[in-house]
Length: 318
Image (cartoon, rainbow, N blue to C red; front, side):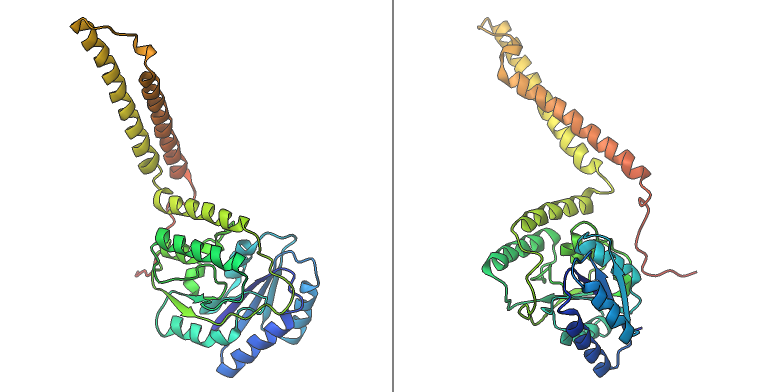
């Protein structure tokens, strides 16, 4: 099969018939063999009934229905597990992503050899309350991830080699960072394609609100830490803890040494415990010890984790 189109959705009953007709038209015009996988993320409208009606008219449709709303990342995770096409394309169900982009995205993966091609909606039809935080967010992700050539990490329109989606785990709200997840899994041939952004035709955006950007930064910090120290937590906690402990130890020695010097010189002196620096140094030693122990416990947990020896293998000869 050439293409699997994975479409997560939540309350998009109006757009689904038009979207599928558009996809079907593009696929048939280009002679692609394909499947369309709808993932209904606990919709409360008639979205599932619409999908069932579409299924009766087309054998290309597959669908998954969640019992409740879990989010876009779980929906993509289940869609990726089901996808069988050589190239997997994701898009939103609100008609803001154009299926006319599919042939070029497919060509860039199959002929140009990219592992992942991410869409860039250079000209957007979103309000400023959404576009300005998005620009700041993308600039931060470029800096942290090291993927300098992407302008829009969160664009729903993306194309992947099938092997990519089978080797990454999209969970919580990590769909924003799929290129970063792919890079961490060893898929570094990542490109960008400028794509058209349609204005929303039906309903309202399900992803408004400034809180999602704050949550996004927390997820980015979590992903960076796991990518860098997830398998070797002692390299973070151990180094930081040891540094704090030795700084505290040196400070205690200096405080004690200053008292001994004053005593031997016949100068006035006070008890070590009367100095605030003594307590600061002692606190640093305690915190350093706790951080070191946290790293040690992290190593024990990592050592016993079932996925500790999961590595992506590109080729194997026997």
